[in-house]
Image (cartoon, rainbow, N blue to C red; front, top):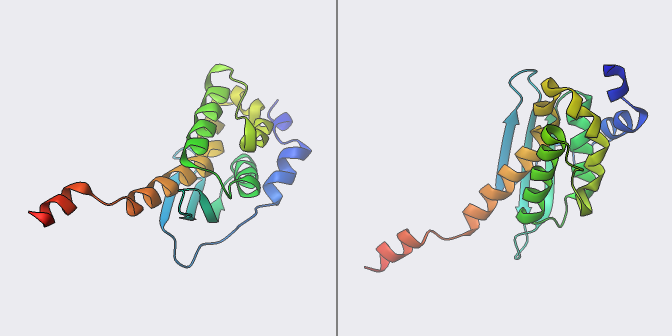
Length: 156
């Protein structure tokens, strides 16, 4: 029964969305939309010198499941690396699609969404904030990494 999805834990996470809004000068921005339901997440980040998130903001318009995932991210994402985010995303997808246990470490709280696996129509909305965050970090990393082709061409 779908009502079981909306546990007190999920609703509490959905109601508490840390780092809501947008950053004034992001280094990277990611945006994802779940086509089936229209859930949307826009995420802004800045990174420290080691490529870890040091500022994060999210504008999430999603169902309770998408909001809950964004709530977990908002609580734990500061200090995360692209490797940690990629591992969390991959573990989330495995949890939703093939019976995996879910993310470990700083993103273990996303396991609260394990029951969503039984509702494939809800998978995309559950993933929008995670995917948008990973897109934002990758955009920021690309911006920080000089394009060697350009610098080599300029030296010629």
